[in-house]
Length: 411
Ligand SMILES: *Cc1c(COP(=O)(O)O)cnc(C)c1O
Ligand SMILES: *[C@@H]1O[C@H](CO)[C@@H](O)[C@H](O)[C@H]1NC(C)=O
Image (cartoon, rainbow, N blue to C red; front, side):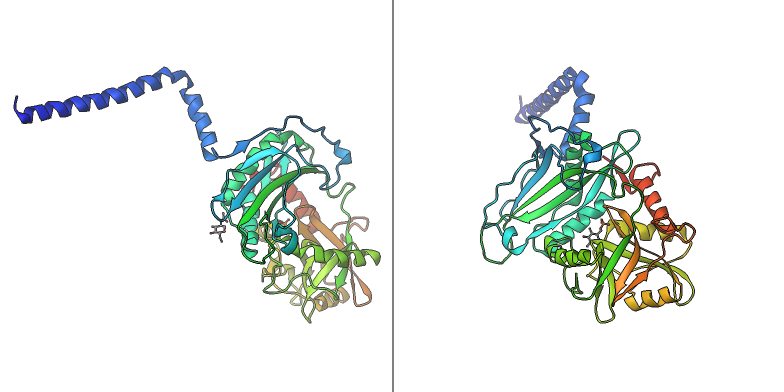
């Protein structure tokens, strides 16, 4: 046999062997045919977060009766934790029993406030499905807050998938009653054990969940505000647009002082003209007839000192889609409110945020006087204006899956 022929034979034989090998694979696959579709199905689910490790709690806690729920006091059985280091990046996410963290007292979170957080809710719809409301916006904001204080950034979509796993495990903690929900608190802290002020090389991201009752147990409760001229919450170039721990503790004493005077919240102002910024930890809206006689809904623009609220964005989006009145993001001052009040042009004012959706405002203390803010002209007993009520209804309808909308994400 010529060398050439040998070579042809050799090649065809090895080719046959290759085929035989793939044929064996095929047989093996067929052998498991009964499991194939199931396996592929499981693979598809697991593949997305193969790295997620779940260690279920050995004993489950007793659920708190709905009527006894107090905001942020009760926590579910599990939590999600993800460690990060500058050397190896994000470690595998872990879901484990809710419990204490072990952190050294030197960790820079305790000294320089390397901390940012989020607040969003999960809702049970009428068919018992769990729903999130625009979680992508919270993840984007979380990522931006982290970046602002030199903490590591992350892939928001991956984190939503991990959160969904946590919610599936603790699903029975989400009260299936309208108005009730599960408050979700993602948090990112520096765990670096050194006292030098500088970039962080170790961090911990965790998510804990707390079942909560309706913000308003007996209908709306309009608030009285203290327009604060002694303290400033945020300023251009500062960190007011980031949800970082450092922004919140300094606002508590002014709130205590306002409460002593009989006002529930601070109306935060900025600058010599006393521009309106936020209400407590909510975004602020004014509905009025402006100087040109137009009906207008106005909220301060995102100039760096305003927290970009998810509800703020949703209110702007919804009211624009109604196309019934002018909707503006622009600055307005205390003098605008005073003048509009004197001329009877004020229609409503309210705060917005995840906890309450809308919080109607009935009075603002400013320079020694209480300015009366209208609620519902047609119903003097009402504690909310028609616009605030309509927005709360529509947003709750979307959150609880009664109004189909792309903002509501099924878990
Ligand atoms: C969280 C927060 C809001 C509201 O944001 P939502 O995403 O609508 O809940 C508004 N202002 C401040 C200062 C906040 O911390
Ligand atoms: C998170 O922030 C980083 C840094 O700004 C950015 O590159 C990344 O796209 C962001 N990811 C998400 C999901 O927002």
